[in-house]
Length: 429
Image 1 (tube, one colour):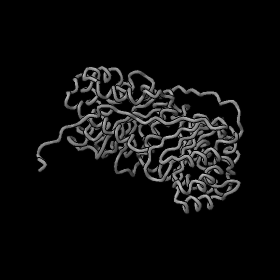
Image 2 (image 1 turned 180 degrees about the vertical axis):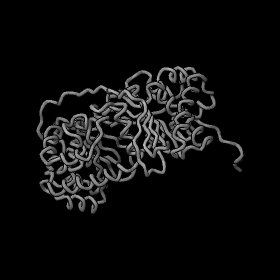
Image 3 (image 1 turned 90 degrees about the vertical axis):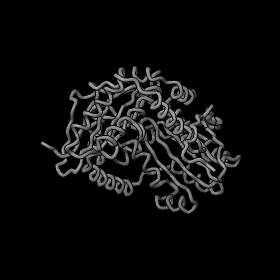
Image 4 (image 1 turned 135 degrees about the vertical axis):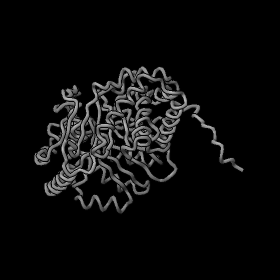
């Protein structure tokens, strides 16, 4: 019988092999990345266009251009697109990020001819219908008004502006008036500039058969499409943090206050980035972290608090976030700084570091266990301009980092003077 009073041994993965995509170039020069790793008769197709909010002329221009692709094309109305995809059991996701837009289709293999026909029409011939655009804008304005009453939303916006500055794409927060400046012509302009075959790459993952590849080439790989031209110049933006340290955004009816703390830090290409990820995980990146153990478990100030790295082109940010009763705001912030002091002055014990290692290794294993998560991993490398060795480097760092390095990193990168503090809630004095 199993002895349930004895913990089973923890087994680290001896090696970590991530399946690489097979790379092809279609006749019209679009790269096609193939991850044939599925047992079920389903595939996921990702169309990547290098055009995100880093490239937009107006706030929300990139987001709404991507969002409107499903609202009508030369061949299909918005209702026909929705009905057709639903009828064939397909699922569509549209996402816009810093430098890329993503059009993602999940489809059963047997219905791929029908679903790819819809996807092709969306990518190549959207019409940006005025009626649907106005409906989406009105809905987004209403959602914006609802969100603007939430302390977490207000604190998040305040922190972004504080650490990046008002002229950086991450710090230039959206206002209600920005929605009213979005027009069909503005979306068409962005589409013409960035949605074309010279600016496109594809990923297909799942049960990828020869028939799948033939269909993809038929719909996307034969001829050039869109307004092909030389790639737009790469844009660099420098964060310009605001000078104040503490910001308060009042919500007089708030039952709790949202607390956000943050600063800019190492970008993903820096030699210390992987080590910094381990430090931040130990500090506040999982349920057993220092912040959770102290501020939730011991002090009871909050139900949950977290710290994490958020990366953008050329820069990352360290973000600490929680919500707490209004009277606990100041003691909570004090405890955050106390935990930073501990990391800088005391070496972490090997037992605690081993727990962080096991958590991060397990998280890596879960992240690359399916064909679709593998596609996410390789898309992440492409869109972040990272080398294929990124995963191996991360694994090596997690396994080999020492308590001495953790302390050095805390001293060098957890700079309390640079942390901005944003509180949104009810005034207590």
